[in-house]
Length: 264
Image 1 (cartoon, one colour):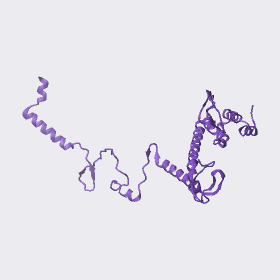
Image 2 (cartoon, helix red, strand yellow):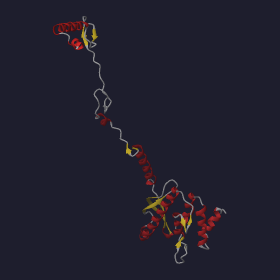
Image 3 (tube, one colour):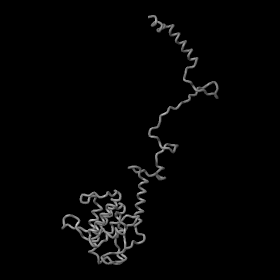
Image 4 (tube, one colour):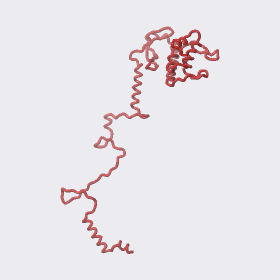
């Protein structure tokens, strides 16, 4: 059975018995889409009509208090209620917390109600589809019965300014943060001039420079001043012949030791 919106509103506003209204709210809790629950329940969260919601006849509660428990709890007298998604549930709990703060402020304001006049500067709650509920500076525009007030938020108030500041601060932190560390800021022009650099280069010195062996070209004077030839590092043929002649003379004088070793 699906009820129309008109039928549903008729149940919730019924004046004959609070239990008829309770049946309507329970129907919504079981069948309504989670994102629409707050829209249906919010107008009645401060409803003061009393009824008995338990087996104890002396234990009574109000419609508003009962609705809050219906939103906060998942178990209703042993019956598991449909689960509300975490994101929606968190949003509902935040709004319920603000509602409790609102009730506390209402009690405190009763002591200064004679000071809350037209033009008085106060702090009031503001919220819309784009902004979460929060307290801002406001001015009382009119006073109605039952201590209800109409207020306006002055032009240039920080309703959007605070939010914009938060967005900019968040973006700035994202730009500076890399993982869990913060990125180093680029050096200023004067700061970059004080950095220690290698001479005749704009590159910083490497922590572990690679070792290399430079080749040295040794110049041997030749017969011609204009001709320069690199030395190969080997002895010349003349030096080889001189060394052989000295070796022969030594063998002739002292004998050939290597030859004697072979004969033995």
